[in-house]
Structure formats: C-alpha cells, structure tokens
Image 1 (cartoon, rainbow, N blue to C red):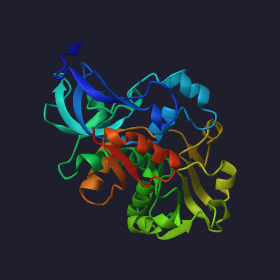
Image 2: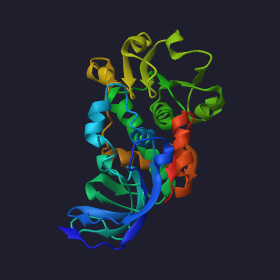
Image 3: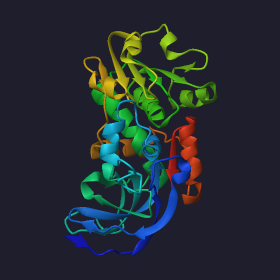
Image 4: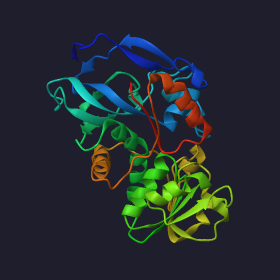
Amino acid sequence: MTYTRKVASMKAVLVEEYGPPEVLQIGQIPTPMIGDGQILVKVMAAAITVADSRLRAARFPRGFGILARLVFGVRRPRRAVPGSMFSGVVVDACPAAGFHIGDEVVGSTGLAAGSHAEFVAVDATRVVTKPDAVNHVDAAGVMFGGTTALHYLRVKAALADGDRVLVIGASGAVGTSAVQIASLRGAHVTAVTSAANADLVRRLGADEVVDYRVTAPTDLTGRFDVVFDTVGGLTAQSGRRLLTSRGRLLLAAATLGQTALAVGRVKAGPAPEHPRYFTELLDLVAHRDLKVVLDQVVGFDGLIEAHRRIDSGRKVGNIVLTP
C-alpha cells in the first residue's frame, strides 16, 4: 500500500551518468511515495561522504569494480538521487510507522540512497529520534564516520581501556570520530595526519601526532594494540608489523582481496548501520563528549565544489548538504 504525497514535487541532486563532479545536476522530480512501515522526511541536512563521491565516479576500491557496478548500475547509477545519511522532520507517516508528523529524526536510507533531496522516503526501522540538544547539521554529520568508527573499534577491535591505538587518516570523517571514541574509551591514541591538522586531532584527544609527510606509518617503530587504517594506506603485511602480539589491524578502506583474506587479527568489511549506533553517537554529541568536525556546510549551489573537495583528499571531517 502507498500513501498520498504531501508535496507533489521536490528539488533533488541527480547523477544520471558516472563521471567527475560536473555530472551532478539539480532537478525537479516527484516527491517519493511512502509505503507500509515508511515515513516521509523533510531533509534538513544530509552528509556528503566519500562513498557518495566514489559512487558518482564509479571509483570503487580495487577488486570491487564489477561487483559494485552490478549492485549500483552497470552503465549509469541505478539510483539517480545519491545520499544516505540524513537528519530531518517527519512530514508524513504510515499508521504503523511509530513516528508522527513533526517528529525530528536521524537515519540512513542505506543502498536505497535518495537523501540528497528536499524529501526522502525511508523505512521507519532505519531512523531514530533526534535529541533536542543536537542540531540537524551535526546529527547528519556524525553518522557516516561515527558509525564506521564505533563498529570497528567496539566490535571488530574490542577496544579496551589502556590500549595503544594508531589512527591513520585521523582528520577525515572516520578518523575524527575514531580518535575521539578511542580517547573516550581510555586508549592512548597516536594520530597520523598532516601537520596542518595536528592541532585539531590533539584537541580531539590524540596523545601523539605523526605527520605522514615526514614519517610514513610503515616507518613507525612503536607497536600498537589497534591499528585503524581509515584511508587504505596499509596492507595486511605492512599493518601486521605495527601490531603488538595481541594487536588488531582494522582496514576500513580495504580492497576486495584484503577483505576476502581478512581473518584472525586482520579485520575489514562494511560497518552495519544499526539504529543503536545512531542513538549512541547522537547521545555522545548531545552530551558534548563527541565533537562533529565540519569541513563545510553547503546548499545545492555548493554541491560540485563539495565533491571536488572530497576528490582532492583534503577534506577535514564532514561535509553536510542543507537542501
């Protein structure tokens, strides 16, 4: 069963072919209908992530190309409207959804995409209530990097108080969350980033900072209980050399081969988008235990420049779209 649209049409980001940022277009399309168990959300803020950039360009981790095109579209994106993580206000809901018009929610559409638009339809099981103390921009911004960092450190690494943790790519969306989550857990954190971002990661909780332009992570002489590579710079072989006897290597940007061979102390693979992660992250932000680092907040007119920023590899923290 579907339900009547509250608004006939909406503005949305459209990616109708793979390519550089310039393929992004802004168009007017029908507002989505909602089905059983779904809500329609007025998007107040949506994260623009490295995943969105990769999907736009069909630039997938090595080995995933054919599989990814089968999932996301062989010749062009199967889902024309990108984006997954969002924060907004419920404007319509099916009776059994458990949410009401006016509720402020945060969630993810997952592979269904569609959040880079004025409205998005989403299963109610994929959203949580936004705390009043967290604004929409911070709520959307914490989701992508936060869920990945939380899952990798808590589940894959079983992070413990006193662990020595190395975070590679510490100034990115995942890295800024990882530094803070590890520090909150009582770990000793060494952050690998550029000199320009050294003060930032120290403020986030890093005990030591390594400028990767001066010292490559593979040249470090220390040993760590957890090595968290958020950018794809290590292999299983090079990463293991940095571990203590009980250390765990986390490869968040692994190739297909690395993912398939990730066994024992080497961990890889996608981070599930559990609503309980959303709630925990939002509570940390609400209590000011976790800071959402924002590179920029843009409207539709800043979208192409935002993607260029991501493609440059110099993005610090998160970029958020406010439709």
